[in-house]
Structures are given as structure tokens and as C-alpha cells.
Length: 456
Ligand code: FAD
Image 1 (cartoon, protein in one colour):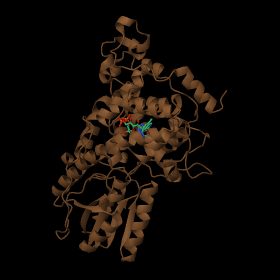
Image 2 (cartoon, rainbow, N blue to C red; image 1 turned 60 degrees about the vertical axis):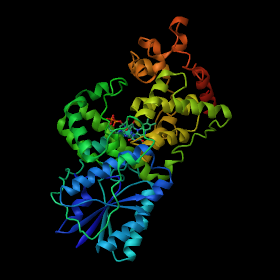
Image 3 (cartoon, rainbow, N blue to C red; image 1 turned 135 degrees about the vertical axis):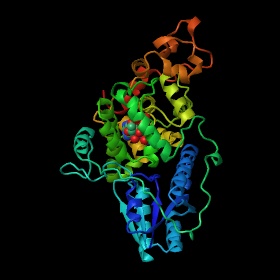
Image 4 (spheres, rainbow, N blue to C red; image 1 turned 60 degrees about the horizontal axis):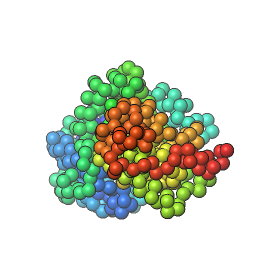
């Protein structure tokens, strides 16, 4: 007997409940990945994530080959392709991970109906994408938590499953044909310093992280220049690392750094349980503030300056340039650039979220859209109208200016914290001519935002 395992964003062999279930009772398995045309057409398969994905698929194929199997790759409509592969292999069941976006739910419903029409069964497994499944924890009287701290308390008491080991052998029938596994080199237009993908890379990174920098994470996570976070987000997004296993191993490592890291991984589950309960919040306000976002021509110029890292606020520009160069941005950078766009410039958060998704290697509907909403004050933040001042943020989280100097070469010659206000420098110490003056006065930006939200 044969089962198909449909991989989506769970591209690993360790701690993989669908694979474990499919291999039960001496079954053969068809490990399948479908290059889903609908995701490509929706514009979600941007170069940075496609290149990282190619690494992940290559590594998954190698891992399967080392276990006597191989990865089967197909392209097209994910439901049609999965049904076709199941028919070719004579499989009677398909296993996959549960996911929570609107698209993933629709995919699951279509797949179940199509398989059942052919006399086959779909098994959807919990606890593959998140450490704690959305819906597993709910407050009295609601289908989800809207406040993080009480969610975290319950989440922290709820132990995820013990991580599963990778199977020793994965017997795959020879009869099923595969397209070539895509190569990273086929993808053009990627960020120059994009991270490498794949399960081996993700596991290596987790091990090195827990042995090293994690120990100081509680005190250093906001240090922009120190770059002291795990950079595991793309691995968690593509599932080359299981969130349950990351939590489990960090708890075993122990200490305040590892505990702070676990709390951060909980944020990921928190946003997913909000999105699972309110899938429309991928593009609709979770809580409307009746914003009339700017749409005039000057807004278009401001948006462009923000995207290019040319706002004249060095910390904002440094972070936006890191995003373009690496396809990744430090969390503190994400917070302050998002606040700058949505609040200081009063531009619709959806425009910023779309730009982030066009570049982020960890670009993720739940984390990106709901963090943007959190910052814009249309989401779950209990202080929806706070505005981050980029000069204060710069001085606090990049006190010596090393992060700005790394990303904004026009200011490389400016020493110390003065770098955060280059317009105040005496003429002899001014930055090069090609660095712009601020595109907005912070007090005016704040006043516009407060007027728009009726706060005065
Ligand atoms: P670490 O600090 O090492 O944290 C460990 C893990 O915890 C991360 O890998 C991530 O999975 C999770 N995590 C940390 N902070 C958050 C958070 N605020 N919300 C949810 N999960 C978190 N994260 C994404 O994975 N994809 C996105 O598309 C994304 N977009 C964002 C957009 C905005 C505007 C903001 C403010 C944050 C966004 N984040 C997103 C959350 C966070 O910035 C990144 O997860 C983090 O910077 C990744 O770096 P790291 O792996 O080194 O994180």
C-alpha cells in the first residue's frame, strides 16, 4: 500500500507527523511537492523566497535519497497534481500539514473533495506548522486570544509534542515520475546577501544558536548592530525547522536567553491563531480605526523614498536597505520602519506589508500582515496610537551608529550618535550631497496622525 505526503511549508524530515503517519505499517510513500501555479500567479513566489525554496527542495531531495527515496516535484494546480500523483502511485491516502490562511483552507477543502470523489482519503495533521495548533487554546467566550500575555501564559503551560526523529528509510515507488528539482541558480533578481535554505542549514543554525548567542538574547535582541537574533525565521516559515522542536530544544537549553527566544516563537503562534480565527485580516483591519490613509501624489513620493531607503532618517533608511540587500530585516528595524510608514507618513499599512512581502525571505501572511496591523494600530496592540520616533529609536537601539554606518555609506564618515540627526551637523561634518534631507518633519507627521485618529 502507498500514501502520498504533500509537502507545503513543512520542508523537513525531522519532526514531521504526516510523514511518520504515512510510513506506518510498512507503507511506501510518495513525498510530493507541487510548484503551485496559484501561488505564483498571486505574486507570492517572489525571487528571494523562490531561491530559498529551491535550496529547501534540493536538501529535502538529498535527505530522502539518503534514506532510499527521492522527492517528486510537479507543477500546476496543486489539487489536480496531487490527485494525478495519487492515481499514478495507486495511493489510497494523502497526508499533509494543517495550515491556516484562507488560501490553505480552500486548498484543503478542494483537495479533500477531489480525493474523496476518487475513493481516497485526506489526513490533515496538527502541530506541524506551529508549536501549538491554532484553536487549541482559547479564552472564555472567544474563539481566539486577542491579547498576547494571557495567550503566552496558557501557551507556556501547554507542552507541544516530543519532536519526532527523522525516519531511517523512506521507500518510494519507482513508477512515479518527477520534474527536475528546481535549482537556486535558476532564480534571478534575488537580494545579493540572501541566506541559504534547507533542513540541514536550519538545524545547524538552531544548534549553533542555542550553544552561542541565544544565551545573551534576553539582553541583546534589540541591538541592531549586534545582529544578535537567531535568524531562524525563514526556516520556521518554510518548515525546514519545526517550531515544536525549536521550543523543545530551547527549553532544554534553559536560561533567560533561551526563555526569551521561546517567548518570541510564541508570538508566531499567537498571530497564527488570530489569523486562523479571522482569515480576512490578511488584508482587512482587525480593528478599524476609520483611517483615511493618504493617497495624494506626495504620498506616492514618500512611499518611494521609504522603499528606497532615502527618507533622510538614517535608522529608517539603514533598515530598508538591509531589507533590499539581505531579504531580511531585524525585528527592531521592522517595527520602526513600519511605524514610520503607517504613522509618521500616514500611509496604508497594506502598502508597506506588500513591499515587505515582495522581499522578505521569511515573508509570511500571518506574521507579516498581523505585525503590520499591530504597528499600524489596527491590530492587537493595546496601545494602538503610539508612534515610534526614528531619532529616539536610533539613539536607543543603535547608540553608536554602527548599524547606520553599515547600511548608509553616505554617512560612513559621521561618528557616534550624531549620525541619527545628520541635518543638525555643522556644515563641515555634513554627509555627502547624495544623502537627502528628511522627507517629513516628525512633529508635523505626528500632528497629522493625531488629527487623523481624532486624538486631540
Ligand atoms: P528571533 O528574534 O530570533 O525570534 C525567533 C523566532 O520567533 C523568529 O524566527 C520568528 O519565527 C518568531 N518571532 C519573533 N518575533 C516575532 C513577532 N513579532 N511576530 C511573530 N513571530 C515572531 N516574521 C516573519 O517570520 N515573517 C514576516 O513576514 C514578518 N513580518 C514582520 C513585519 C513587521 C512589520 C514586523 C514588526 C515584524 C515582522 N515579523 C515577521 C516578525 C519578526 O520581525 C521576525 O520574525 C524576526 O525579525 C525574524 O528574525 P529572527 O528569526 O532572528 O527572530
